[in-house]
Image (cartoon, rainbow, N blue to C red; front, side, top):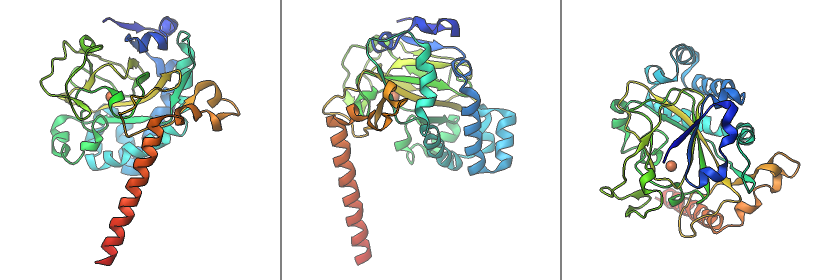
Length: 304
Ligand SMILES: [Fe+2]
């Protein structure tokens, strides 16, 4: 499967329909072209400063996100990641909309995932000491093994907008396995079972501001970071039409907003379709169960 590499004057040669059918595309310089890059950099530096102080901000600004690990440890990155994700998610429509506007038309209106994900993968000699502690951060602060996104939280029609904010190099990139796009794999939980054949992976070298588009149901994984650089990427997601979930899969439902309604006065109802799903009900039940259990355990500890 060939990857389309598209310059700003030809982004409209790819549509979300093409991507959800399996095409992979790199939109070169997309964040700069859409007028988003400087805002994402500024938001990141603000959060770096909140967590690490003004000196850390100045050093990261001087040396680039690739050298973030020279100026912050993993403990700081653990704080930066969710704070920055929350900040970027506050205006996810503003982040995604200019990118969607440049693409070819799709048959159905896109829905925009309400969550932006921040992925800061430091070199492996730093990450190695945190792998067991940060299992829940797979794909965010530690590499993620091969999986399909619909196995844990996303719709089967969900597309990743994988946005390089720092440089992405061979040795710290994303791997996509196009040879097994339409085949079944044995699984261990939400991951492909180790030893399953996956064919020849494709990896992507990206410049800051490039955006990679790929269907979340492509098997994909992170490379173990064997470079000297931190790999810093943010991702947003869209679905083609309302999100469709595997009914027995996933516990991490997040809202998706109808693109047109989200930019109108009807924003409040723009996520209704994504809430009318079994995945949403499952998420609510699991959240209630979890808060009941945590209330129960705090009552027990007060009784000791
Ligand atoms: Fe994924």
